[in-house]
Length: 284
Ligand code: SF4
Image (cartoon, rainbow, N blue to C red; front, side):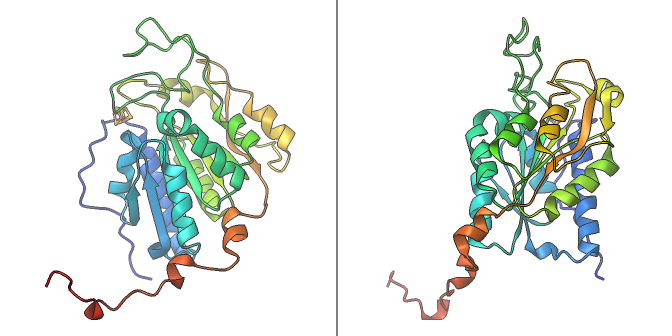
C-alpha cells in the first residue's frame, strides 16, 4: 500500500492549545485508518465554512472546498448530488452551523442526505475575538456580552434528533481515540451523520478543565432508541457544571435523499467533457 501523506504545505495558524488540533489529528487518523480498510482517498471531499474551524481544509491533503458562512450543508449536499460516489464531509463552527446556518443544518438532517457534518463547538466566535454564540452558556462574558449573556444555550443534539438526523453523536476534542472511532463510524454511516465536537477555544473560552472532569463515555445506551437518545441528550444543556455524556446517541438506517433523487444516475459522470481541441476560439 502506498504511504499516505495527509499533510499540506499550509502554515497552521491556530493558537497554541486550541482544541482544533485534536479534531485535525483525529480526522487525519480516521482517514488513514479508513484508507487502510479500503477507502480511496481520491474520492473524499471536505468542505468548511467561515471561522477558525474552516482552516482545517487547508491542513488536510484531500479534495477540499472553502464554503461561506453557514452554507456548509447545502455545499456538501450539492457535491453529493453531483457525484454520489464521493465521500463528502463538512466542517463548521458552532456560530456557523447553529447561528448563521441553522436552517440549512436542519433541512439537511430532514432530507437524510448521505454526508457527514462535524461541528467544532467551542461555544464562542473565536476568529472575531470572543463574541457569544448559540451554544455559549448563560452569563457568558465576551466582547458582545461584557455583562454576561442573558440567553440560555441551544442543545444541538436535541435539534438534530428532532430534525431527523440518522446518526447523532457528541465527542470531545480531548478524547482523541473516541473521536477517531466516532468519526470513522459517522463517515461509514449511510445517511446524514452529525457529530458535535466539544472543542475548547484556548484563547477566548478555555473549557479544558471542565470537559476533562465532566465528560464521560456512555456505555449503557441503546442508540436505536429515539426516546433514550433524547433523555441522554438532555442530561447536559450546556451549563457550566454537571456531567457531559459522549458517544453515539442515535443511529438508524433510512432511505437517503441522494438515492431517492438520483436513482442510480451520476450527474457529474453523465456529462461528456468536451474535447478542448474542437472548441472554436471566438476571439479571432
Ligand atoms: Fe482556536 Fe480560539 Fe485561537 Fe480560534 S481563537 S484558533 S478557536 S484558540
